[in-house]
Image 1 (cartoon, one colour):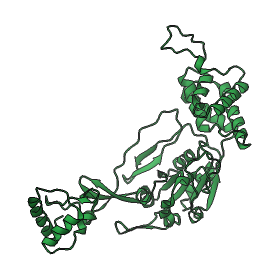
Image 2 (cartoon, one colour):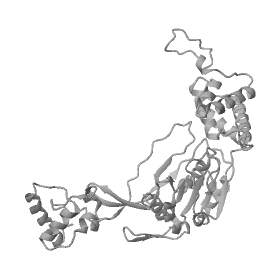
Image 3 (cartoon, rainbow, N blue to C red):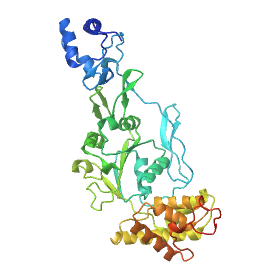
Length: 404
């Protein structure tokens, strides 16, 4: 796109200014005003308001090469090119968001079915809501590592629903959610954010860890009412297509965290929370369900040890009950049981090494208590002092029977 007459006049004046000042290529606002004054023009806001022309704090460049394509007037909404994520290891129960083409050739973001997933809790209720195609936001709360996000992924897979997942942080703002301008090949281009993508496609929007958000997330208020949203930066109104829905997950109920375990979890605006018609309280799976989960994980790892699975699940259950009674500050999540299962396969089916390695993240007192408790659950093993374990690099002979 070509310059306007006034823009051309300003560019020509800039060229003269550059010659007079030793080919100066960066200009302050005072410089821009000085150049404009030489040709009786107003301050060139069309320079300072375009991100492409900003080169530093208070410094700008002028497109003296005659290219005005970076001007705001040429900005067009452009959808980002889809990129298929890498497939994770089979042992990790995290589904992959697949992008498949529908009958009309449009790319669809549908989670793939996870063979390690075992339905429990409110899974069937979530599926029913998603299959209804009604706009009915869901708030899912529960302790860490109990499968909240995985449940939503698999509910979308079961319902054949597109899903856009957004991991919320305290820094998440309107630009991250609704979209913003990006620099592409020297041009300022508008990109829809995941919220707008989901709205346009009638997809499911997953707001993961929503209780980490700041007040900046209030830009979603009209969206949470099932209404459209006005994108003021590109002067466009986007309406919600049929099937669009919102699911939020959190470790708290949006009222803050008194335990100190979820650093960053804050108090969400009451008006924001009130826009979720229902709240699902997700607990850890029952013992029988957790056994099924670990059975599938062990099968995927080509190992078999039903006795170890039973002892692991009972051990975790005792720790959780102790946690609920306030006698311990940490617990063993379902996710951590999967980690232990993977470590068990990696470290030659050494139970105590797998457990010790996976509880090392806790403080010494908690770690010792958890390991000691397992030795009481499993009478065939005993705790090992890691400092007494031989270092294979410092010793020529290593007793392979020593439990690491």
